Amino acid sequence: MPRPPCRGFTWLELLMVLTIAAVMAAVAAPPLSEAIARHRLRAAMNALMDTLQHTRTAALYRERGTLVCPSENGRTCSGRTDWGVGWISRDRATGDVLAVEDALDSRLTAISIGLRTDIAFLRPGKEAPPGNQTLALCLRGKASTTLTVVIAKDGHSHAEPASADVARACGARHSRNR
Image (cartoon, rainbow, N blue to C red; front, top):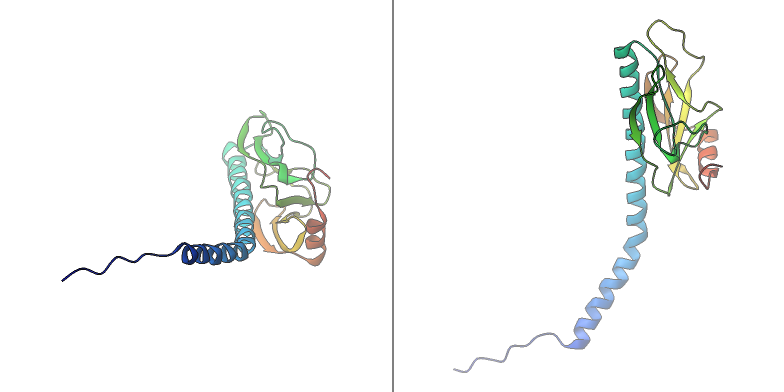
């Protein structure tokens, strides 16, 4: 008995399937991009909290002060409140750099709330500066995505929901070094 001829797809059928797939990909791309940016925001917050914890531990272990500050070059503190440029951890006495974090994704904003441009961890028994320090991280121009890291006077840090004022300040920042 003769075999029936093999039948494949016509060019028109293949073109229709590819068109439908392209439309579906175009519809899915913006939410996927937003999800990736939110993941990077969380990763940046975790990296910042890790740096703060390690720097505090170094201050206790070395029995001398350490600090974390924004840094554009990975060697010196920038003296600014924009943490999106990256940050470093350093020994205050020797100036040795303990850790370096590169600049954040350009879709992210990270700022210090207030005027302090660094976070100091003092040697045990030394009086810390008054008050907590708050760092805010968000997707650029999207106040609703704001995450905050609060560093207490004793050096412990934790994440907490952003207040409306902090979220507004973070969301209003549209470019680096403003």
